[in-house]
Image (cartoon, rainbow, N blue to C red):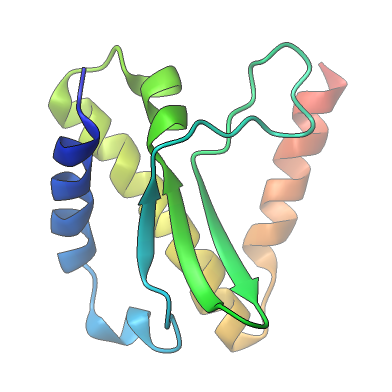
Length: 121
């Protein structure tokens, strides 16, 4: 099991892999929260939110990663595989940020399709 402190170290390392231009207008940075977050669409406690890109009128723009969700979904993985999943999630949320700044919504559409596919099953 990876502790929240170990995950924070991983997240910091992964964040440093990204070019500084990715951080433009991401005034709230990247937050690692301890909780697990279940999707409102989950049918059998099986759809966890790993991360979110947040746009808030007061707090600005930031990325949230949920430690508890990662532990629930990927806690069984070796450290390197866990880190790969964290990298994928972080880059997914950065793609939301960059597409928002560019006025695009392709990833939102992909996420919506994935959710519809989940709900069909």
